[in-house]
Length: 371
Image (cartoon, rainbow, N blue to C red):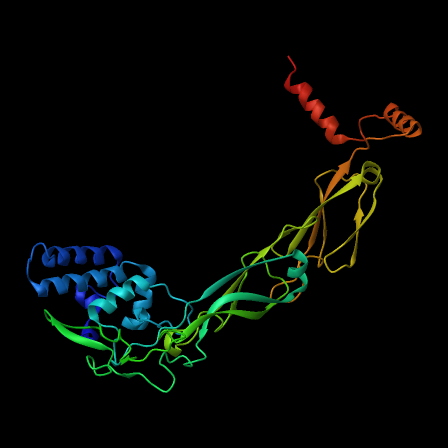
């Protein structure tokens, strides 16, 4: 039986629509039967135990099971996943490659492993996030070796076909009723051997260099926004494709505004006379445009005023969020004699109707402690 003939569901003896409990029960029965401790020295039982363990490890995990149902064994091979985004099935993929071989369905040498992805954390101001920003960053990254052009071999020479695997990149061995394929130990799955490695890259086909990269920060980014630069990560070994560079954005605190999605918020002190009589307050948004807000008479501290369309731009979209202003009524601390006299006159004429919230509170207080 070759690896291509193995179906996880058939291996565990369950249907494709079996629930998690059924799969777990089937695995336990088979594991008890084929466990190496119960079958010492039996290579066939050992191979079967490994196979059902791999099958159960996949089918017990909803994400891995969904990938297997859709792509089959290819879901766990190196470089699989297509355009559906990164898949993190490294553990099961490694086990699969060890037990059943490195490439299902077609054989051949191992695919060149792409370079590693890189991360760069960038801190920007709220103004940069509002307007967008063009900048340049410097990072240390592995690039294709200029001397050997990524081949890993000394110029004028080339890699030769591996004698052990005849260029296939893998060797086969029979283990029980399975035919097991493993990476060739001589060429490590490449199918080729470099006899005269490049001196500059020591056969890797890549060297570390400082690279300066232009980065475009679009308007509307926020802390946690990730910008992907395709092919700007580590170069792959021996001419393999490069990985990607991911820019992670972090916003610096702003002295005036706080951000909540596309909404900008701030707290504005207002004189008690303006709060009592009404008036206007003037601000400027991040675009530098004046924003005039009407303050209705009798406005209390903590109340919010909203100016639509004066917030942050929508990332990769149209329009802007809102500007929300929280009012903080400020009590004067320095008064002239004339001002004090006017306030005293106002207090002498108070009836309690001017501040209904205060009046209601003290009436409730009297009621609560009445005997």
